[in-house]
Amino acid sequence: MQHTLQAFKPLLSKPANIAIIIHRNPDGDAIGSGLALQAFLEKTGHKADLISPNEIPNYLKWLPSTDRITIFEEQVAEAQKILKKADIIFTLDFNDLSRLGGAFTDFLKQIVKQKIMVMIDHHLEPSDYAHFQFSNSNKSSTSEMVYDFIVDMGFKDLIDKNMATDLYTGIMTDTGSFKFPNTTPHTMCVAADLMSRGINHNQIQIKIYDSFSLDKLHLLGEALNKLVFLPQFKTAYIALSKADLRKYNYQKGDTEGFVNYGLALEDANFAALFLENDDEGVRISFRSKGNVPANEFAKKYFNGGGHKNAAGGRTKKSLAEAVALFLEKLPEFKSKLIQANV
Ligand code: 5GP
Ligand code: MN
Image (cartoon, rainbow, N blue to C red):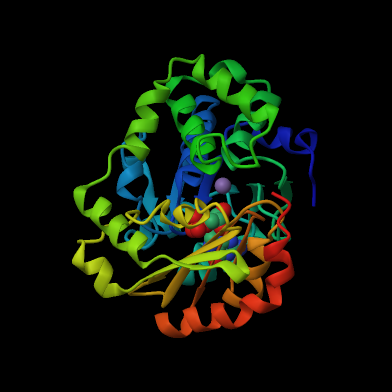
C-alpha cells in the first residue's frame, strides 16, 4: 500500500479509464468532492465517471453536473459496465466498502483485486482495500483533501468556478459552515482560495440551508416537540417513525441537520436522531461536543462509525427497540458524556 502522491502520479501520466465512487446516502462532501475530482480528471485528459450507490438528495441536485452521476441502484447494468472497464477506481469520503451498501459492496468486492484502488477519505480506521491510500482524519472533509490533491498534482489553476462550487459546498456542509472542531486554519485558506474563483458563497448557503419546503419545516417542528433531554447523561435524542415522516410528505434529505438541534441545548454533549426507514430498519445519526466519541458509540452498539463528533449507524430493530438499546447503553458511556471538556 502506498501513501504518497509521488508514487501515484505516474498513473495519471497517460489517459486512463477512471471510475469515482462515493458512499451510500451521499452528502455534500461526497457529491462535492466526487464532482470536482471528475471535472479535474476530465480536464487532464482522462475518462471519468462518477457513481453514487443511491439517489442524490434534492437539496444537492442544483450542484453543477449532478445529472451526469450514475446511480448504481437505478442503473445497475450501466454502473457495472463502467466499473468493469475502469483501470483506476477512486473511492471518496468513506473508509470501508460496506459503506456502499448491499449489492454495490458485493459487486465491488468481486472486482477490487483487478483494479487500482485509490482512497481519498477523512474518516478514522480506513480498511485496507486500496493500493493508494490518502486517508487523514485531521482533514475537515474529503473536499478539502481533493483540493489538496489537485494542488499537489500541480494543477491548481485548473480549479474553475464549478469545481470551486463543488468543493466549497463539501467543505461548508462537513464543517457545519466552518463551525465544527474539524475546521482548521488550512480549511479557511482553502475556502478563501475557492471563494476567489468566482463562486457565489451566499447562494450556496441559501440553496442548502434556506431552501426548505414547508413540509420540512413542519417536520422539524414535530421533531423538536419530540426531543427528549436526559440531563443525567447530558444527552438529547429525537425518534421519528415512518408515520411521522409520511405525515409531512418526507423527501430524502428532509431530516438533514435535525440531529444538531439536540446539541444546541446548552447542557447537551451528545445527541441522537433515530429515523425509521423502509429498507434499512432504523438509521441513527449521532453528534457530540468536545471529547465525547460519537463514533465509538455508533460502532459499538449500532453497526456504524464516523468521526468523533459526527457519526452514524443502523439497526434492524424496531424504532422502540433501537431507542431502548440506546437508553440501556448510555450508562456505560456516562463518564465520557459528562466530561466532554467542551
Ligand atoms: P450522518 O449522521 O450525517 O448520516 O453521518 C455522520 C457521519 O458519520 C458522516 O461523516 C458519515 O460518514 C458517518 N457515518 C454515518 N453512518 C455511518 C455508518 O454506518 N458507518 C460508518 N463507518 N460511518 C457512518
Ligand atoms: Mn465527509
